[in-house]
Length: 483
Image (cartoon, rainbow, N blue to C red; front, side, top):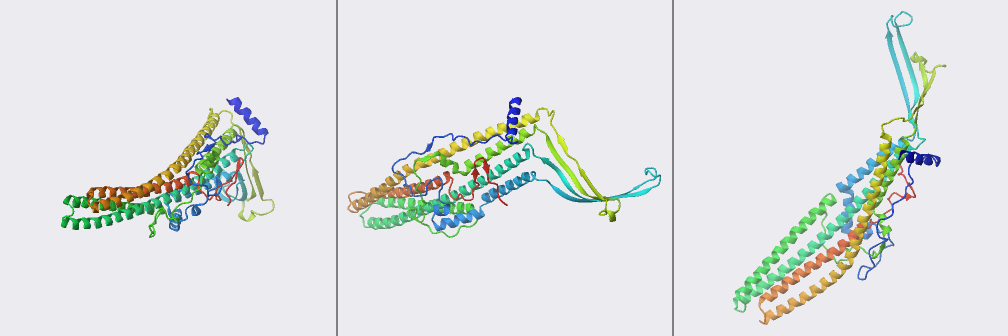
């Protein structure tokens, strides 16, 4: 094992003193295409993937845009993600600083009294020494790329943290949108319940008059009262859910939510854009920030192998200074007071008890762990996109069927009311039809909500839009942050 490692290192040295293994992005451990082209889904209307529009284009509702903008400014989870990016960037700066010599200006002075029995002249005396120097701190000549490898690893960690921030931002946008759509849906169900309660109140007034006139039975009256109280309970339930939805939005937004107009989910201003084809190449998954984060972590682990390999080779450090020195403070800059020192050092590991080899083994194992983590992330992303794409088709079919059900139950209610007025049926048939219509209308809202939420999930699972601020990969190199 050790001989194989040293041979690989020797070859790397001949190729330019880089001990970092050549990086290759792992093969995607999934099928070449995610999703299957099917009929009945949404038609493609967006730009060609993998570039999706930014959230302002994807979600055109002005109310929602205001909420998202507020959340991006005030949400505490996103703030923490941004601070993590700042921390990683600072750590990258610390590691990168080791590539440059550290210079410092120093001044020192000392005075001491020597007793007679310690002085060379046999008399007590006072000795003084003053100096000013420009010093080169211990600077490592990075002949074997140890410092460059650590700097590269820190850069990749910084970029991974930046992708984690993008992932947190994408998640926040999606969560705010989903919470907003849920609020609109529950508000719409509340309106349906209020309408059902009003209709039932008018019905019970009619039945009470019929009962007082002897045209209806007490059973009809009591059944109408049951239906009224059921509608009131439904209204109270959705009023509670609307209040709960507002609280959830407030937490995501990071403050009080503005007064919102309750719109129907079918309002074009509310509907998120769509247009992703049903069948996509699996390579679109690489636009996801979590996959890019996993790849940056893999690159970082790969760079750490170079640092572990460099530990087998000598480390050369330079220390020196140049300046002036004198026994009198007034003579510091007189002619002939110049002083300098130069102290190079070399350390070569001879016996470390196997520590260097164990560190190299550990670095390679961690690199292999990052490969598995990358592959698992890709597989999870593949499943999310595939599930979302397949659900879209069936949700569209379900919404069509539910709309037809609403129309059928509305017609059934009309017929039941007519038969009750003519005395052909009792009021129970009307109650059943009214209850069926209420359930069908509310279920239609739920299905529409699922369809719109599916679009939000697809936007999130494909990595979202607005890729201009994303760090750029160029082959095996990565553009370092500026500033």
